[in-house]
Image 1 (tube, rainbow, N blue to C red):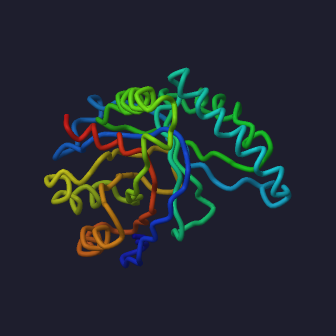
Image 2: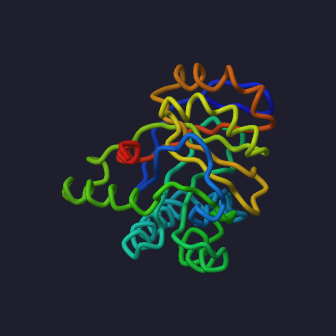
Length: 242
């Protein structure tokens, strides 16, 4: 499902290959800010030089990009990575990374090791993320599953989710209270320094029908927001077990 302003449009489910991923079950209410952990969230966006590359060049850059994701994860620097689906409110938005640092400058240094960023195929929009979600555990869960699968990411499996970005964290949290109580919020937190919104949440939805059923009725209560189809490893759901 894709929702923008106060109305929503359908979510298209499109499988996209990737590596690691995210997150945790949200609690019923946000704790004080000093009880939350800080990370840096990066929105991967289409770079200025992307259109200039040939299909062969893009294929080579993509392979190097994926290899760098694995390297950063092995170094425990990158704890989340997952692609957006299509159609979406903004097709220039390509994916989400979350880095295990509270410092934007440090995360920027790590993004600059990406061959796709160096080539101008991708860009990174960085902002600080404050959340109670144990994102480091998400990476641990993924890596354990990957090891059990013999190092084959395709055997771990991917599934669809919905990512909500809202201008008002207060309105969005209140509107999503029913989903939170029902265990449908995988992850949520505040964003500092992002033009995309001040609040982000990942919703556990199996398909477009469920996304519309859950989010459409509360869209008017959330204020201005967008909803993107997003893909992540199935191990993300393990964090909902506590």
